[in-house]
Image (cartoon, rainbow, N blue to C red; front, side):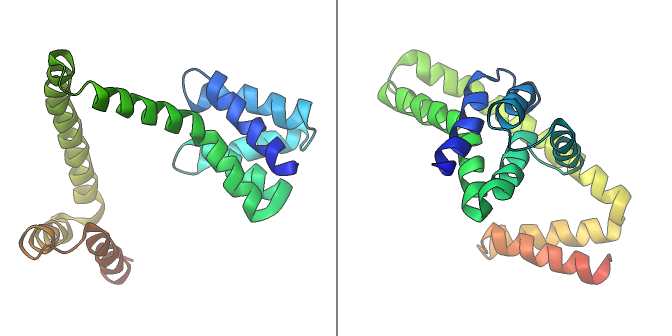
Length: 176
């Protein structure tokens, strides 16, 4: 029964919280503090502060932490799943709709328009990462990591996960 309560406590704010994580925080507070009484306002504010201090989506971090506090590891899994389930369901529905109408000229035009936008957003993000790396690690380390990544992934067909793990190891050894 507790898992169902955890699920509903984070699923409903996920559906009703238009605007993402920050807009759903008051709804999560209403469920966790007022409806179920799992935390006090003070405890909730501490969880919110901790969630804001860590990188990533705040609603999922809070759902994981609160779920863990209420029902252990399985509570954390249920809480995180419940917080992402509304978006997951909408994405699956949208992909299903697009796949059903993939031969439509409107859908083809939409995907043709979206691809360059995504490419531009990824290029901007890569540039920002490069600049941040340049300022943080210097041009030598940035160049070594960029060249090694390009060589490993494009020429040697090494999976990106291994390249990321190797980059982390390189950073731990040479940049710590």
